[in-house]
Image (tube, rainbow over all chains, first blue to last red):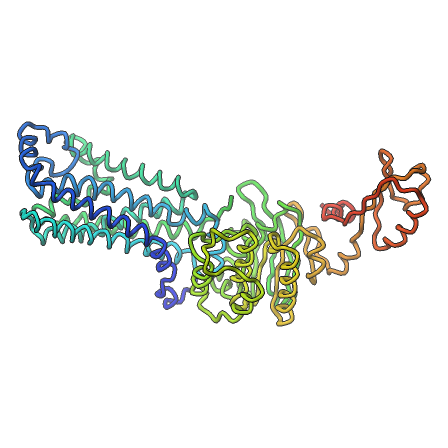
Length: 274
Length: 289
């Protein structure tokens, strides 16, 4: 329908501006996650014995909602639960979703969208480039966290397969991009920034609950399939170097579908004011 | 080819009417006034023309291109000043203009000149701007790449009289260059000062499409007065009315005559008011709405 000159798209001015807009939050979150990574990886030696007791006494079972909880006493298992399952998969996932859900809704709520759209840019291009502009945030925090874990592991002299660590952070990229994709869909449908972000958190927490139930109750195993967290398992990669190829494919399908849905929806909708 | 052409353009928000069956055209090089009271559908019309809202029915063309098919191409030649102007508060004026210039991707031939007329603190963040400063920035961004058409939704609302004057002069200069301007307003005196032709919209419908001269002939002043003598004794026009001792009538263009007549009476109180848009409707378009 819209004849878009490919060269104009490649210039990615909207993506660039989006990136600049998130510059401050990228720096803050990078420092935050580096700090968390330092804390948990350096804490392990002090907790080693306590963790071993916990696993023996069966206390670790209360973490059954997370994958790899049976291995909590080892360095990899400890990192998996404390850092990757909670702060990475869940908390960073929520943060990425929260930000993504405001990508478009923010402009509609603040009514800056009117003037913005008076420029010769197509609606599809706006959606796509806004999404693109969020990816650097994901990449920077992702690799900064990886380097921190690597550094601290060397410093505390614990055992960790660094190839697996690298793979974990490579697969993290499509996972967070898929989360951002879901956030983008919410962002084009809900026109209020806070409402969109809160709905997105509810979606992610809901997914996480489904996945947890499926892990704890074998009869409900298939419930986990609707959760995005089901398709990215840091423990398997970190400990065993096992990448769930089907999971990665699902993540990419989610990314593409979310982008298509967002672009088509935004193309057709009225831009409401007030 | 007309610059803007609409045929039965209709926009409903669900069941609520925005605008209905708008058919009008704007010619190249004219300043077209789009006049109507608040809530008449001026903004809906503009936002539909710019592709923010999908028409429920009818069609519209800008530079001969269909707004539903070629909106991105159309916007290359169109500038816009929204009625409810909202800018990115976290950017400085300069960052904002640079960003928009990069999206337009063309020569910003008028930028320097505009910055001279409409001074804004470019290095300051927009959230610290006053309403007037924001409006000036809105004007600058709309005209900076010298587009062939600029659509303005009540652009003078937050400008002081001096700046309004500068703005009108600027519009006039653009007109001389053959640029087309679509100017929405609810202020009659403003429209008749600068526009060549006027479309009048009320309750979502176009009630009149007139040359400015025709509209001017429909202007007038409302004179209200109380006199010491019996109100009935006042030799006013036939359609004057008397209520609670107040005499009220419309003076179309001959104020002088009336003032001289008034001098013959003992005036207790006197009010002379400009015809408002509503008065125009009441006096001239009663049957058409």
